[in-house]
Length: 98
Image 1 (cartoon, rainbow, N blue to C red):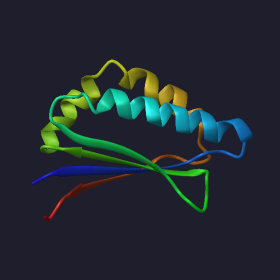
Image 2: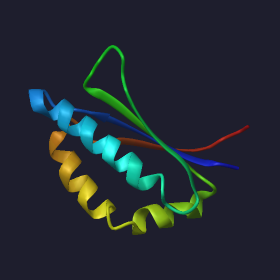
Image 3: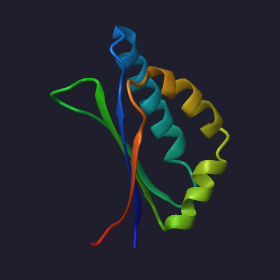
């Protein structure tokens, strides 16, 4: 089974936050797609609300997250992203059925 995380992020109302968050997510995707046992790492922006973003992280299995969390880039991600958000990240864990 593929282990999948979805993370919903909502940028604060500062005009520069949306663009800064968007750039960081694009950068993160390029880095995290290279992690061992990562199938895909996708970032999306809502078409109706530019402040809403979703990350979809797909791993070979749940233990594959180890490589993601051990990536040195991880230490810079939250400190940069969290101040750009209006509310906490909404992280959900899934196992793909098909």
